[in-house]
Length: 295
Image 1 (cartoon, helix red, strand yellow):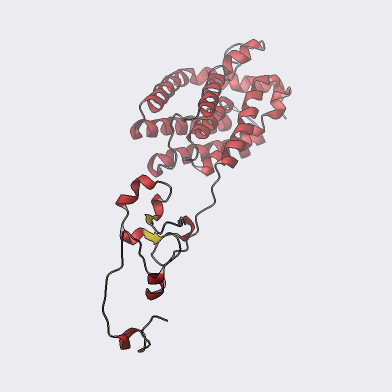
Image 2: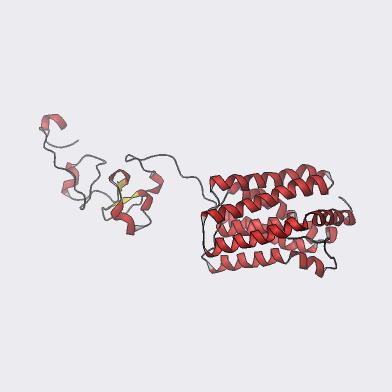
C-alpha cells in the first residue's frame, strides 16, 4: 500500500495535466446525456458510449500506467480500465447497450441520485479539507465507475453483462477507502453504487432461451397455453393486440383438442375455430389402411 500523500500526489499530477481535456469531456458527456434522456437517438447513444470509452482508456493508460506507480495499478487497474474502454468502444457497433431514461419512478430517482453524487465528487473532497487538484474529478477512475454503473443500471436489461461485471470489482473495492484508507471518504458512495449495481444486475439476469424448437419451428419455451383453442404468434404471446399479424409459420395451437372432430384430425395439426383445417378427400386406403379413421 502506498502512502496517503503519494496517493493524492499521483491524482494531483493527473488532474493538473489533463484538466482541459476533463473539462471538455465533462461538457460533452452532459450534453450527450441530456439528449439521450430527453430525445433518445441512436447517434447520441453511440456518442455517449464513445465518450465513456475515451475516459476509461485515458484513465487506464494515462493515469494507471503513467501518472500512478504501483503493482496494483499496473497489473489490475490499467488492464481493467483499458478492457472496459475497449468494450464500450466495441458496443458502438454491437449496440447491446441502450442508454435511456427509465420509466419507473424509483429507478429514475436512483439515476438522478447517482448522477448528482458523481458531479458532487470533487466538492465532497473539498468538504474533507482538500483542494484541487488533490480531489477526485468526474473523469477520474472512481467517479467514472460510479457514472457508468448508474447509466447501465438505468438501461437494464439492455446492457452488456461483461461491462457491468467488470465495473463491479472496482466499485466494491472502494470500501477500505470509504473506511479511512488514503482519507478518501467520498468513495463510500462508490461502494454503495457497487452494491446497487449487484442488485440490479441480479434482478435483470435472464437465463438464455432454450434453443430447442417445436414442430412448427418456434422456441418451445415461449409457447403460451390457454383453453380457448386460439392461434397466437410465439414471439407475441404476451401481446394479444398483435395476434392479427401473426404468420402461419410462427403459430402454435393453444389449448387441447376437444369435441368429436378432434379425433378425426392428425396429431399435431394446426387448427382453431378461426383457422379451420383444409378439407382434403383421400381414398381410405391411402391414409388408414381401410379402417376408416386415423390411428
